[in-house]
Length: 503
Image (tube, rainbow, N blue to C red):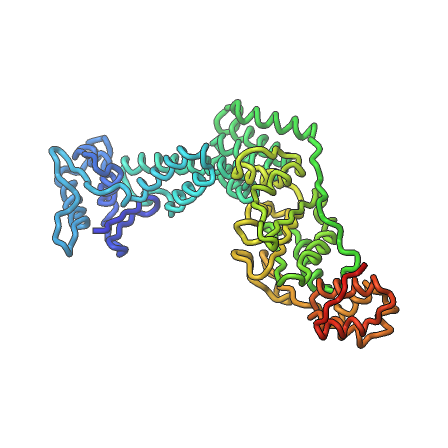
């Protein structure tokens, strides 16, 4: 039959994906009462009270007949018109029983996912977070929207409470996973929408603290205290008050946080790439962004990805006063480092506990970055799976990633002139142009020597294909042999003759 029903919003029914007419509001009230108790008996009186209330004076003259009219229509709705099978609504003594699998009803799928998430929250918080997201996505509006009757009202209140519990648990798990920045708007909106719910004020304050906004957390407590006093005549509870006192103590005695400075030194004779550096610095210097930019520098071996990444990171470090992190992920050497191997070093540099399972370390890393302006440089990454756990989520942070092309899961290439859009963006490096390549040779062997043989310098860089690593190697040989003519080495390289290494 492939029947399915939705109660978390407007009441809806479908058969094989096609919508069905669920009838007028009172019929929906009867249907909803049955759907909320699949496989269990529901008496005539329970259904009558669900629609018309417990006071018999508000009942129709013949409530049983009115109920049977609705049930008859519901039977036709549930019956399979093609197979000619009987309805899944069975008559029992004094009532009815809906013989439908609970997983066909969104309210029951929601409860099942919520129960599983609660059971897994300690051992597998990431899986619990995903389960809660799936459960909450089932909601399209207030449960049983427009359905009349005392039964619907009770069910609506119960389901709304369960939804709030799911939202609160999701906020808790999100903080454990280091997602403070992305939870902030939701935590603020929920606390404003349900001002008498202390738990939401508590979670809002914790999220604010996780984002490094302790002063706003103190203000949020004061606002909550005022609301509770004016609306209920009550003072904040013990949990809310204790959190407030901890925040105040932390504000009065802020702990000094380490400011890591792990960037390698920039290449002394770095030459060219002015357009690429301007783009990277422009993206890294953006303010008011909604997510941490991830800038990927890709290209073949030897093209200068690492040198460009280090140069840009060194120039941008002033925009990231809370520190710079660096890791060589070693993908080109055939034994790439796992994120779990890098996280302890990053955590130690940030002043956080580096011990524990990988998932906990990843969450603690995001927590340590929250509220800071930190630049992360990941050199020689293999793919997104390796780099992903090391990328910051706080929008005040940023990441530069270098990788060979192609790299699975990392952003596709974007032209320099079109790369002003939202992160992530990718620069695909190619060989240096002739002017930049000749300037690199001059920086290594000396301007006077290069100016004495300009044509030979051009032949040299052409023989090297404009690849910076090859140019550096060739120019380094010349620098070690002051008496060599540039033309001699250029000729050897053009003829692919071996050249003795520099002494």
